Length: 334
Picture 1 (cartoon, rainbow, N blue to C red):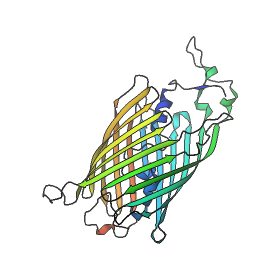
Picture 2 (cartoon, rainbow, N blue to C red):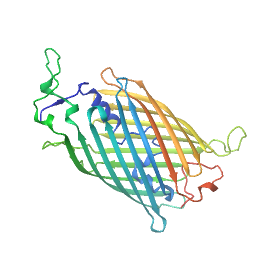
Picture 3 (tube, one colour):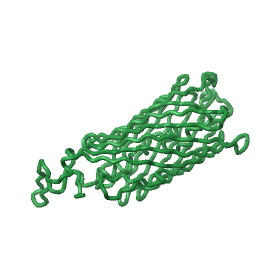
């Protein structure tokens, strides 16, 4: 296959690899199931929701990720099933990646306060590129810099497609104070090439940790009765890509607000993003919004600003009786 060259000489696609592929979230602690499928079995809850993530560049480039997810718990059988459908698009390049994942999560009682949730998932994915929106090597005159409107490359006349299977495993250990997780994605390193060349997804290894504590233990009047601070950390490695994420969120009864920071590094490129999270719960519905902006950028790469919206519906019939206790790490449903 002849080399395909983008207008940004690969810098934009390096950024895309560092941020996307349905594996980047601005509010990981609220939607941990997208990083670690074991979270679908958390506290034996049944939920459904949607997530919208938009990456915006100074070049007016926009990248959209849309996710729908849900899970159902079989309490008497000690397992849960989760499903998520992901769609990732870059309209200007005609790039589209879609994947559906089915997860199985089993619950193990370590003791009366601590639980283990091992899980496996199977994914089916597809990706495609509209060749008419790409620039091929023979279109570029390296001397004059002129870009021809048409290419003689036979690949310019057809759209490129590939399909693949994806396998992964994960585990979470948690109680009402802490959470520790490990997830392994792309265990089979699926081939995502568009022809006979072998281009494989890198094995992704991610570790997560969270700690939550009551900041109004003595029930001071200037804070809601149920006020908690949740600290969350994660680190992810996939080939030459490294990501470190941290968030600090205050839960003030049914309202939450916090901050997040993420450092991404890919080969010689790196950038830092920081932003704010906010959310509100009303009955069985939880709505969250997050915004992130670049703090540090490499001279040759274009860091984006990001906006994320998520909406989750909790099917727990007793949630309306929590009397304002919206604590995140809970085992009361077991």
